[in-house]
Amino acid sequence: MLEFLIPNNVLCHAVEAMLFASLGCALLSVLITQMNISSIGFTMSHAAFAGGSVGAFFGFAIIPSAIFISILTAFLMGPLSDRTRMHTDTTLGVLFGTMMAVAIFFIALMQGTGKGFEASSLLYGNVISLYREEIYALALITILIIVFLIAFYKEITAIVFHKRIAEIAGIKVRPIYYGILFLISIMVAISIPIVGGLLLYVWLVTPAAIAYQFCNTIKRMFIMAPLIAIIISVTGAVCGIMYSLPVGPLTAVVFSAFFVGSVAFSPKRKVIFHKH
Amino acid sequence: MTGGAKDVILLNQVYTTYEGADLPVIQDVSLHIKPGEFVVIGGPNGAGKTTLLETIAGLLPVVNGSVTVCGHDVVSDGCTARKKIGYVIQNFDFHPFTPFTVEEVVLMGRYGKIGWLKRHSGYDMEKVTSAIDNLGLTLIRHNQIGKLSGGQQQKVLIAQNLAKEPEVLLLDEPFSNLDMVTREEVSNLLCEIADGGIPVLIVSHAFDALPNRTIRVLVMQNGKIILNQQSDPSKVGNLVRTASVAA
Image (cartoon, rainbow over all chains, first blue to last red; front, side, top):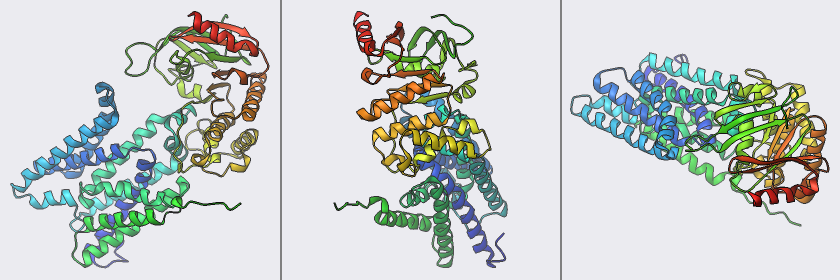
């Protein structure tokens, strides 16, 4: 797609992958942080990680396996909390631990069966050896997220503000909420080969966390978070490939550094004293 | 009270429960509310007052009986019913940096009526402006809601429900965060709404803030209505107290 700009094929693929992954994840990060569903996003990203590991071990395609387990987990979370009569966070904690254990178990097994490279890609991601189809899939899900956000913008913002108030306004909250969970499931599953199961969460939270420090409206957050994510991710991919550094971890560290800087310089922490 | 074609709210032997609760919270409640009635729901804590409002708004599972608002069954057709119901909730806690302005929050009240895949029109904004002006929020319409005081936030939520042009208005402790002057203003506004034919149901312990008009008093205890009668506003407090103690 961007060959006319970047003649180097490897670099071009890496930039394209990071561009779409960061754009899609950053848009979702605004929803995840503002709806306070970080624990849900965290559990789903690790469910995708576990699905990918199981798929890779048994020789299935990673992305469909990751999507399957991630969606299954998303739809299990609600009923499981009701059945166990526990706080959702507790149920999510149990699910997260289980998914992490499953992922690590199969990754450990893969290292003993000559699939060490695949295992490492699942953990930390690998932007260099991506297939073109994987980048197309990323582009497609990113477009789907943008279309979903534009089409249901008013319903989504009302749910982000207050789920109960949105319901009282006459909005069908459930289909939109499940739509958001579905998109998170697909996005995390497709992004795992790029940024890795362990680091994916950085892309799903940090862009919005940085944007939040400078934005007073959700509209601005939806613009600023993707811009920040694209700049950091593409820069990370270019620097990583040019200086032979691991792209995923490098970009994740840059994200964290930007977050620290944003907190330090956020206008939201300024105290204004009025002189009378 | 007898039911009839003009009843806007109709509850027939209703039992409702919260998900995960062992017993129904509302038990065998029947109620008929006509247009323009001003209803005050009183009773001790945990009597089921908020649950009754949530039941009318179709926000809780009805395990037995039926609830109809403006001709719509709130269980099978809840979304359509809620487009006609204004409901100011009691417990809200907005983060100081919640990225929404007063105007955006008030506009949300109209989202259900606007419908899927449509943008708000000039008429919607007219209703928003009118509600904001009515509640005296004009100067802070572009401020973030999280940075307002509890009373101002309460007024924003009332404005949100007025902008909706409801056919039924439910308010849970609408005076709890308001100062004396604002209480009187809100009380007069609610009185005007009821005079315009819209039934107003409020859960309240602030009986001194009630408008000067005939009021129907419902007293609840253990999920049941133990008193249902018309009263003068000055006698509501005594009625509620006496009924609660006698029960």
